[in-house]
Length: 112
Length: 113
Image (spheres, helix red, strand yellow):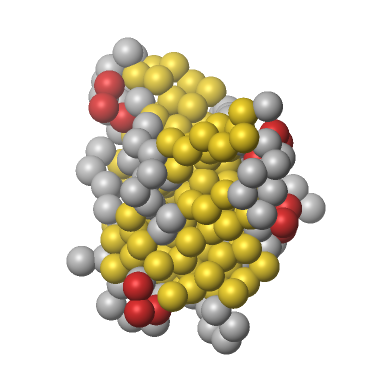
């Protein structure tokens, strides 16, 4: 039981390049989330998927797209990376409103 | 507006001393409250959570937190800090049908030997 896994762990992009961050959970959770973490700002929600087949914007969605591929997988895509997207990205999942979110180990992304 | 405030950016305590980390929230619905801990380079681990019932909740690693509705607070406490408790601590609130959590900006705990 691996919990929430994320790939890659580290990535360096040049401005304008695109990439997809992958997230998978093996806990049969309905809901999945993408956050970014920046110093002094805590975690900010980018997008979330309350259930398979649905996605919604969070607090900071600009510059990102998501795909809920199936119940297990939720990917985050940067179409044209910008230096402002340098951050640590976390994926999380849970089973509903009363359940805590379980977090992956994070992806550290640097855009130069 | 929904928000979580952790007023202390950094806190330094001596090993063996007691600890209290503050958390205040603003939330329109009945809040579900969480404390997470993050060690350097790691993801977030749940310390404890409050949904309903007894307002004093116990968590892992000897931590506890008290929900005070009148003060909109959910402060985290530990009677005796260990060097391994040095980490960043995040308070979060949720509870509406969107299942989203709102996080505070975090408090970094440093432990003096």
